[in-house]
Image (cartoon, rainbow, N blue to C red; front, side, top):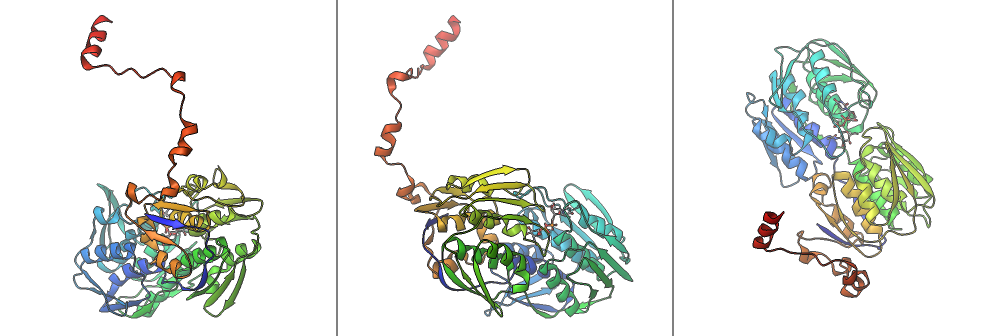
Length: 463
Ligand code: UD1
């Protein structure tokens, strides 16, 4: 758990790591390459090591070189089983489905199960792969997919919540090996999909239209391993922007792709946050007073759903009423009750939360439920008066590389300790003096009656 001593403005310089959500599908796509793929900018995260284990179980060697480069080589291309025990630890493991089917003609991948951020089916992934001619069955919790030769076709990949990011990645990775031309309409336009597409093209694929909802893919027979640098993490950048704004600080944030953050800049500026862009760096200056705002999470280039919780933490301190709506994951509000433990005034209304801004948050003991919710709680704790405890920070370790160290380097006070009662700060425990007025007058309450077993047996017999 983290013990956070809040109320310290962050000041200094911090650098963003490579994007988790780009690195994962790219690592999975390395299954398709002949030779050794070298990936730079892959963050050191629990999710990356989980996917490395999945890839190793699929016959790949995965090594981290001293300079941080990740080297991936497919040694045994007969294996095609992504086991339940590994996939259940990280749903992005489903990214191996498309590359396995495309390159090896077979895939057996455990269906990802439930998730804390809401219902997350993979029906669109399967629809796209079936359209390419794959035979797909679900059996004992696994997706079995096979095709001797995938055939290019026209695929519409939109669903009730818009496009799908990992679904587009999966269909793209299979379609690069399909015979003839494939078109994908309503493809996801997220920068992470573009990074995957660029990487596939560098390997020899022929994909056009990346970054638009219309992709055109000419199938090829083979892909060759290349070196590739993963794009900077726009969600980490946005989290750091909010960290500066929520603590009343000023940060220089390096290794940023500003074009990926246009919507985030827009909402932060409307709240009064100062943002200056210089090449791949940003300077963020918190305003004296934050203004309230209505924000809706939408597919790219809209506000990312992965930043919704962090913005909610920030808006809980803004002057006025804000409405935050999530159109991608309408149930992604697990952070709200925990923010309320810190004093935030928030009401959930369907796919929206209605936030009445307050002057200050107060430190409390809170529980992280998922990756971005933990980031939101950490941000709130950085701004809160007094000490906070955030439990289950393993969620944070899944997706942020050394976040507490980065924040401590710019003035935060975050301590990682084992979640034990003795590590709970005294300031969060009620003192005896504080408890005394709460004590119930014993004359008001009948004394509880504890019966011995013999007495209880006698009473039962009498009744
Ligand atoms: C990816 C990101 C995740 C981010 C999300 C939305 C990775 C590893 N994860 O998740 O961090 O929050 O994009 O930007 O990159 N849907 C269906 N059927 C499907 C697939 C999705 O109905 O077959 C729905 C989902 O339930 C959701 C919406 O479509 O409502 C978007 O999901 P999707 O883009 O697929 O999210 P992920 O790729 O799982």
